[in-house]
Image 1 (cartoon, one colour):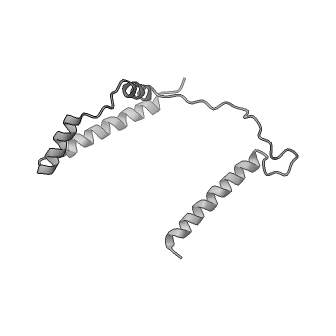
Image 2: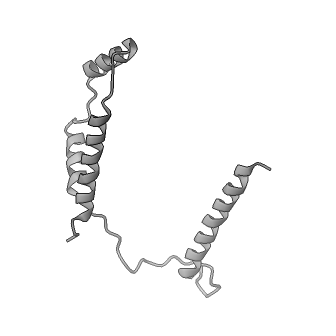
Length: 111
């Protein structure tokens, strides 16, 4: 038996137990009359998109994700010549800025 098999079985068993627990909580496996019925949800699920996600969607709809073939070719050529260098400081600064924006977005209380 492979070592990875144990983890796969354990994960599958955990998923099955979670599904059974959810089914029992909703009365599907309880043995009561009508246990197979599907009842309407008591509450309504609601999704609220952040302003950042709305901005990204608007940019994508406006063609903001278009591939700049000239830039791609320029970078590809620099890589093949060994002239393309990545500044770790620039990458780190951008990662920190994006993380700060995400934290700010998550910290805004929902209305």
